[in-house]
Length: 152
Image 1 (cartoon, rainbow, N blue to C red):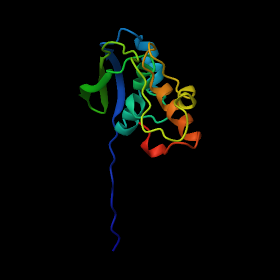
Image 2: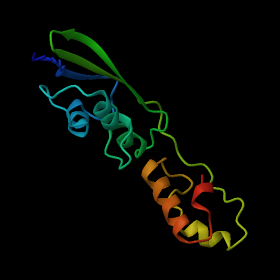
Image 3: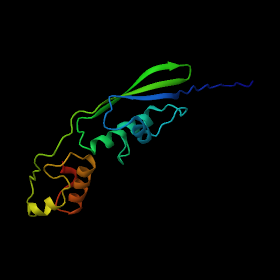
Image 4: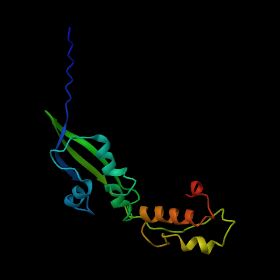
């Protein structure tokens, strides 16, 4: 006796992707960073990585965070689901740009503070930048004076 199992997988596809609330960047710029086109298979993990969880900084959130928008947020909302297609609206809150006020070094007992300050890419008066903070942390840990796990 032969037993057959049939598995039917249903996929959803992106149909329309729109943006609401963006004033700093155009829809076209954001779509280019997002890298998702109509007809692509809907994958929530991929969408979230492209919006805000790419460790390499190639996401929409990093674009804003590197330009001072510390309070930026983006929320994907499924506005229409028909048959096998989804329309998404990316609701963006840009907020105000944030500037660095002061940079403190505490807990340093191995070298002069000026040695550490040379490696810090974020200076008072500059716009907040996620990538500059990450780079500063990386360069401070490479000095060998600080425990990389305790840098914050």
